Length: 225
Image 1 (tube, rainbow, N blue to C red):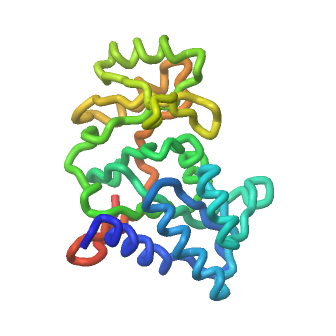
Image 2: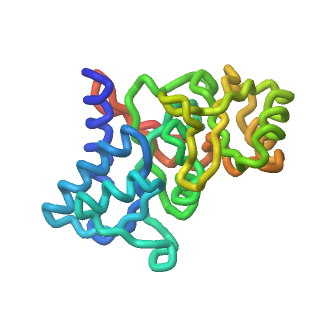
């Protein structure tokens, strides 16, 4: 089974949790994109839902597929969010933000009654930190935040596109990817980063996921906190 096939399998399993009348949050990234495409097929078959996306890319894809879109003014509480993760550790501690949308992802997840992670088995780790930890930063504050992250031993580096241009989030901010290695105390690390003025958001998602659907050679495994 390829990684893409595993992601598709996890996404199809997640569809079983989406019911008529639900308000659903749509994630960002490769796994979330596959889920959104599968969800679009269900909508074509008659599934009645309304959705809020966590990025411009996911929003545009949903619109193209005919998935009804709502807003937080109209729908302040979501029933369910389906989104991927870059790392899944015990207790469903996560690193997210490889797709650059962790700010909107946290907003969407925080509004939902349930957050289901969909991922392939390569994303499951014993400890967070092998995947670089993203930190979204106000442009003006980049030098200050970078130095303070260095003091914390998090080894930040600015994210760029393949052509060398700076990566800009949907909110117009920069991203620092921290090659911090094993994060021994994710809660403390999250708190330390949060206290740096100029940080908009970070990629540690702790105590937010209610279920993870992890797909691999043996099918889909359910993990809970």
